Amino acid sequence: MPRTDTAILKGGDPHDDPIAPYDWTLILAEMNRTGHAVLPGLLSPQACGALAGLYDRDTPFRSHVRMARHGFGSGEYKYFAYPLPDPVAVLRRALYPRLAPLANDWTERLRGDRRFPADHAEFLAQCRAAGQGRPTPLLLQYQAGDYNCLHQDLYGDLYFPIQAAILLSEPGRDFTGGEFVLTEQRPRMQSRPHVATLRQGDAILFAVNKRPVRGTRGDYAVTLRHGVSQVTSGHRHTLGIIFHDAR
Image (tube, rainbow, N blue to C red; front, side, top):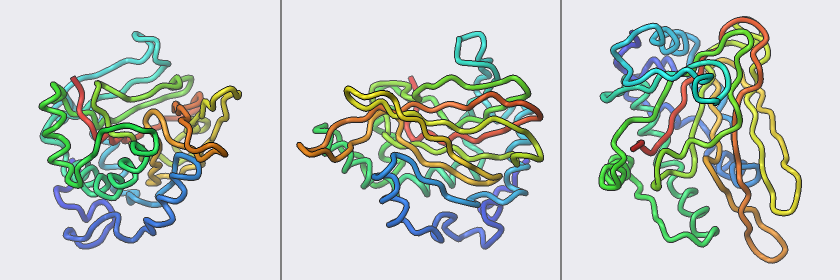
């Protein structure tokens, strides 16, 4: 089991903010520019191994999904149950307030009327009031031949417009292939792909559904989807952190 303090995240003091070392001005600027940004080395190799090792257990999870049964691709994942493992809960709670101002800015630029509170607990209370009370953080597992179709993680009418994925395995050592892929559907244009180069412990932040892009006549909406290309060998584990809960 993972240790129950936050030191597992960066190998430092358990009271440290695990995301404090990052330059959030640059991260948010990159999110505005491309719809995604990488936080290198967010988790230590030890943390990655401990979290990936949870996959074969039953008690931390509420459900088990095999993608092929639903046409989602090939591979599988498990949703965590409440209470979340401490490292997962800490990351979810720490990342949310850094992203809430950007989420509000995007919503305003897309002419939406929703405003996201600064505190994640308050946002989860809004989810429960909307009938969305099931936790959405998850562990994904792929082996040779597996892939994840392009998709969006919405789970209900109320969703936070940004989410995170953290690669728990090391490319080239634990698996080959299996690149993280994003596509942007731009109005009256062909889709544009992005392939993120991630190492073990790297996190990627990305748009859940739509993001605004500045055009000559103001902002317009670009729709994003994400997935994973086919794994050609080995095993790949990923931690997904979604900030809204599900129906």
